[in-house]
Length: 249
Length: 249
DNA sequence: TGACTTTTTGCAGGAAATTGCCCCAAACAT
DNA sequence: ATGTTTGGGGCAATTTCCTGCAAAAAGTCA
Image (cartoon, rainbow over all chains, first blue to last red):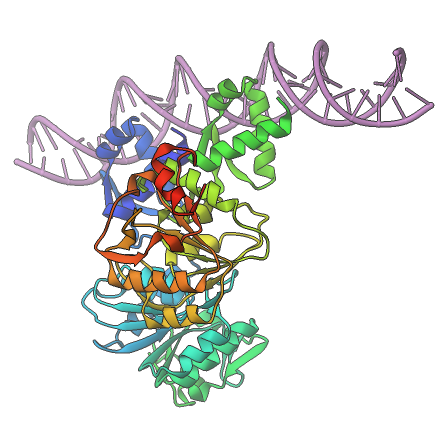
């Protein structure tokens, strides 16, 4: 048994059961407890699991390839996701774009919420599938290799016939005067269509992206209803966004 | 034994088992461990495998949680997938349904093929995204929680406007007199639409499912062009399928 | 063909990684 | 408080890796 292989098995075990017992693993994998202990240590150092006395815990529940240690600013995004969830009500039709913040939201979604989600992101859809009480509709189309989201006219066309209650939109660049900006033309097209069809728009972004500008504009900020960051809404640096009439969270 | 030949064998081994042990290979190929080590090194430098201490792992090993030992009849499905791949040609438009056999096909797809895939299966789409030279179009719709595929009228409608060169269809039940059968009504609807739109149909199934019948019929077998199993096409138990004019592979 | 170059292979010896074991301290349970 | 379980550091045996080297094999060119 190769070391990497063993560690992969441990990770899988943790992702399925949310926890592992050191002695169980030792028996199952037929290696000494010391070896398992060292494996758990390494995995914990890599941020993939949480080491506890006698075993280890999953950092999260999800089943798919989403590796939280690879997600930049994981902590902040969890805070944002939690705030965004307060906007959700049973029975809503919610449009949700791609991006790691929305993926995190899908992951920590309370089990009792009954939402119908619309998404064009493969990984978000995959994560939403894990939710017991929500339905997911995938907006199909040509999949962009770099982003894993469906793009193109078919997505836009479908959005024309739908009126979601809320759109949870990930953000690339956001600036008080330049508005929401992106660097991929296809993504801009999709986001514009999302904006037009949705009754309410919430922009989700880590504070680091505030006052940053990309090449292509999605919209001016007056289209936004909510701006959700990990910061306290009363913070000074958010003042100019409040002045634009956006509700801060 | 030529060097290239040896490396090809190693690659094949890795693609089948997802891992190789250096010492095993040395014994199997009857060359020194150093030679195998150098081979693995070269393959790793070429980005084809991942070298680890004591052996090597398949690249797709830690791409999302594709668990080969959780797939029933994994070996057989790999054989079927390999046969099905021989039907593919650059530039084709190929409709591919869900199921573990098709997932396996997506996983071992040769890197140089340039195919445009159409699929309504989340996991198949996810795996196809890993392929460097193929495009994937996702047929959007309501996602079925149990199967992870998009179902409903929207998928059927989209299929109406598309004429794929080939449909690779996973099979639930197949029987010479009863035809293709399924146990989920939504899936039947989708599969019927797939059959109608495609120029050629290939049914992929492990031999174990031959002569089994489910509650709902998809079609009679005269709609099929190819039947792909892990068995030698000359085998006796396939005779009655050949008599129906299906090309066996 | 024959001399020469390049590639491939196997081997030796030392370095590095992995593993299991031991002992003792820390954490936990009763 | 006392006994039990778990964790950590050190150590040794084993395995794997790396480097350099030389012989064998394959390729090259006159």
